[in-house]
Every structure is written in C-alpha cells, then in structure tokens.
Figure 1 (spheres, rainbow, N blue to C red):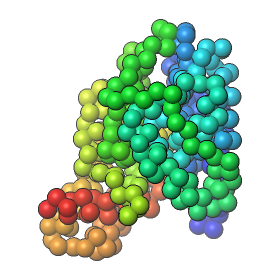
Figure 2 (cartoon, one colour):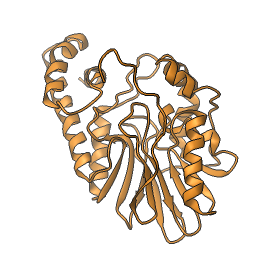
Figure 3 (cartoon, rainbow, N blue to C red):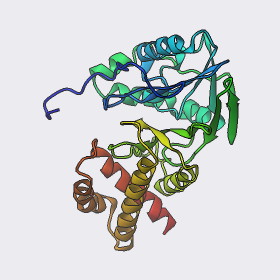
Figure 4 (cartoon, rainbow, N blue to C red):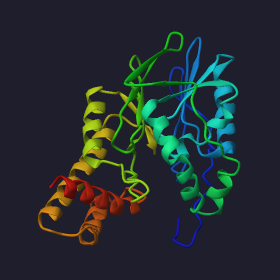
Length: 299
C-alpha cells in the first residue's frame, strides 16, 4: 500500500480455516485492526476467541461460529479489551455465555469508552465499524485459570496479565497444543505498545518478556497470534527476541542519560532496519518510549 492509499476497511472478511480437527481460525488477512478469530468446536460446546471490531464484525464472527458449531451452545472469550479484539461482543450477548478474566473486565470498565473515542479518530472506516458499538460485560469472570470442557475438547483460559495490557489472557488447548495469544504475539508485525500517557501508560515491556517466557514453557506446537499468519513456537521466540533487544537498547540509553525523545530519534531507525519484513513500524517508537518510562522509573 502506498502512503497515499487509504488503509483497507477493518472488516473480518475471510472464511474460517481449519488448522486442526475442530479448531478453526478466521484469518486477519494482514489487514490492520482485524484480529485472528478462533472457533473451537467440541461435542457439547463451541468456544469463540475474539470477535473483531464493532457490531458488523461481531455479526460476521457469530454467523461463522454458528455454522461451525452445528447447534452446540456458544461460549465467547476475549484475549484483551482492545476494540479490534472484543468490541463485537454485543452480537454474542443474547446467545452466548461470555467469559473474561477479572482484570480484563476492570480494564474494560476503566478504559473502554476512552478507546472507542480514540479509535473513532483513526478515520472514517474505523468510525463506521464502531457505529452502534456497545461495551458488554461477561456472564462469568475468573482469576488465574479457568478450565473448560467443550465435550471431548479441553480448553484453558489463562491469565497472562500486565504486559501488553493489564488483562491479557491466552487460550490453551493442551491436547492439540494450540495456543491463542492475542496481541502478546504477532507474526511479522511490530508488537503493539499502547503507550498513550497520561490516559494509558500501563503497558510493561519488562513484564511482557516474563509472560512470553511462560508461554514458551507451554511448548505449543501451533501458535495463533493476534495478527498475522498462524505459526509455531518460533513466533513467541521472535517477539521475545525483539522485546529483549529493545529493552537492552533503551536501558543503555537511560544509563547514558538520554531523554525519551533522543532515545526514539537515535534508536528507532536502527531497530526498524533490523526487522525489514515486519509491518506497522510506527509501534517501534511507542515501544522505545514505554521502555524508557519504565526503566527510568526503576533506575
């Protein structure tokens, strides 16, 4: 896409792809602000992971889920509260059980409306996607881990909080060794640092690295990232390697007395050039500033 072209509409447009028996992904097709949506079909219940942004995308996700579920009841869960992942939940509210972790619900209450306003400023296509949006509370919350028996298919919702957002979770299918990571992991996209002080500065790159260590310890065979193609555990290693490199570079800048502005000016071109195939390089600068604030506070 050239710099003069408008970005594609954030529409969940693809058909589901079966990545393992009963496990489906509606791929993002590398369209900004479209997530990978998961549908896990068991003998007694179907689990949906994320919805896309806004009621129209929620309707599309719901239609696909119903077609795949073959009449089994639906459970919806969201990897984190950001609009492109969970602000289509209203489509599911009348027909599905909805489960969030408690920290995610608290963060939704604290920041959700502000993020609707922020995202609406991203342009007409995003504003249209969010038309008529309503934020939805879950039927159930959990802390730590919640085991679900879908009927012959085990799924675990696991908190992975404090890195990308305060309320991140992953969805782990232990028998198939499939991991849905949300935005803790991307495939050839720079990690998204939602560092928007003073409104939202809760992202922690240091904690994010610790979370990725925990995800690697699961030894997943298949990883469904928040954005980008499905891959293997190498996706986790790639994001962790990037975050460690960014942390270490910023730590040296802080030790040298550089301001956040200087660190971004000096380091951002270097980091971008190290990852020429990764998209959305604007997040590099946000990552530098987030690490600078965190490491300066710890100094």
